[in-house]
Image (cartoon, rainbow, N blue to C red; front, side, top):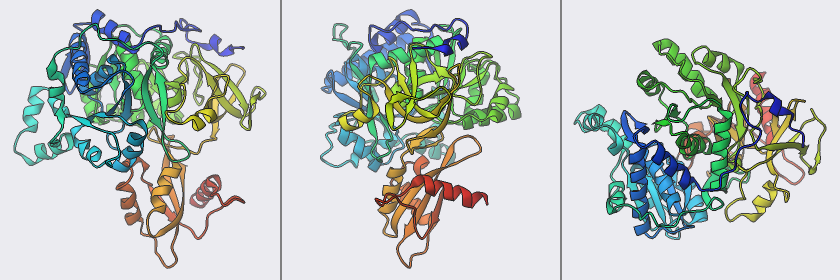
Length: 560
């Protein structure tokens, strides 16, 4: 297969990577061994060295073993970015068990489907989110909850400040931590000594992570990612960021590590490079810039709105970001205006990449080189191939420059969906090619531009929203007879969630009530930003709502 894009790689980037032969456990153990005294994690100023990280991983693994966790078991992580998250991730993998990542802001309703699907018996959970796990039905197999108090990872001075009997401190403390009675605490989990070195380790082809991704059916599917998939994607990232040095880089972990993009950037690639990971539980532009005054970022990967806010605020505050040399934007389109703004304050190029959970997740990117082409998602990563095919007949490749569905093949491509062979067969062709569901055009050099999505997912703030999931919630309201949910473009390159509803006869639209109904059942980014009532919805001959027509009509009405 021709690979014309290789000629446009940054000099020094190889066409192929060396595929890993060992698991992610070997990755972290090597970093602990080689970078023992170097700082691995920074959290509000508190530092954890690689040696300390390694010891905590072994202690957490022993605690999990004593809870009965064995190779092949699923262990749920329900955590924001924190030192405990990094430790828990590798402790689960050390036992040969499988990490299942969850957004801690999900509602009980959203978590229920996932827990019913993966059947984890042990969960490591932010103490604030524990009540949502307690609310899961009795038929969910969860037996043990390990509660994590993030505040305990803060520096002493900040912990003392949060304990002050003043209103501001109490309010902040209540957002960061909450009582979690009848759970094992994180400290207790780590209190039983270290796992014996002879305990069996996983192999490179073992399943490492189940990462849930929103599907067009409304029920999230668990993408199965092996140690090989994730380790290979980390090595591909290392090849792409040519010039990044071991033990010299400072990664700002702003993207959530429960998301595929953040997981690979920080938990695998960042640890591979033996970097300093500066962890943020949520994006706060002033916290980020305060941290930059002490340890400026060299790797700053985010979504366009974060780049825009960071650059604008850095200019206001006069904070130097020229240290940021490796900057990849993903998950949503990157406007030229954001590129220009960011590059006016940073020390390198801001390039757009492309990935999906099923590809661990990164598979294309623009080079860190003048050959990059803004407005495109770049070219395939090393050891990655692509084809563009007829979406109705994926065996037929379309002519160069013609619109078609993007297919991907490489060591980072997943093996299928957990407990879902039907959806696996739709996503993976027998030849191993992954159907992305994205319609693209590719120029003669291999630079790829997304023109449309076969899938009707809405991408808001870098997160995928299934229209069906939001529609099902709206239809359950007694005033709503039907609903169509679509994405409307925003000026920052993403989308906002818009709901068009049909109401029962005689009912008047109450936007606030419907939004509150959604807020109780959906995490915040899925709640419609706008709700419109119509008398009818366009439908196919079989009665299916035609979302594309709904979206087109909404956009026409709002731009008139």
